[in-house]
Image 1 (spheres, rainbow, N blue to C red):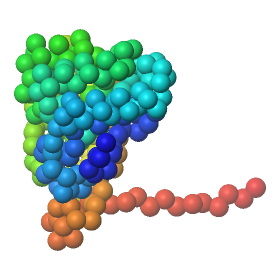
Image 2: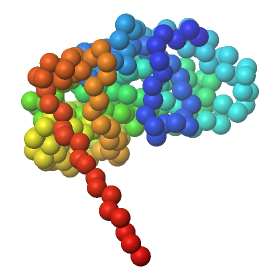
Image 3: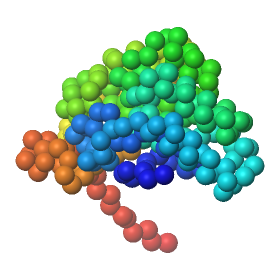
Length: 238
């Protein structure tokens, strides 16, 4: 398989078997992200995925039949329709019959496009542990980051996931509030997480990668990142 772009996966999925399903990001407009620049979003065909799985079966034999968990590669494979996702799950289980959990990244707006019945059918098929870029609980900050959805929308969709039994792992980004706003953003983010009850919270720090809009805003002094704390080392005499 010729895969375009870098393959990313959450650290907690480091030992999980990876299956490419999509390339690029369906949104690809967050101000802080350069992960999928110049990689158009596309769905890999069933034929391509089956070719990949068949080759793996040749390489690893019965070993892959023992796998119980896989991770679908792409910025947000959950952007696929429920029908397309279920077709890919069926294909995966043809080669990996003992798979019980299929995890992936998922955007809030792609959850919203699926009915409750579709979410239930995806859960029943084994789709679970969706990694959602919540980032923070402030609508003002989310708008500045150009996430494409609000905290209220994330709350609504995560509660829908909870109702059908699909676990979600929330990705939070420290420092999104900028200088002087950390405590306020932390409070609303904590309130959101307490309401939507994720199975895991994964935390990273906001970084201004070269070539992103966030980097340009900081250089233009339109955004001031949080000040770094200085730690003093004291000499201890015995």
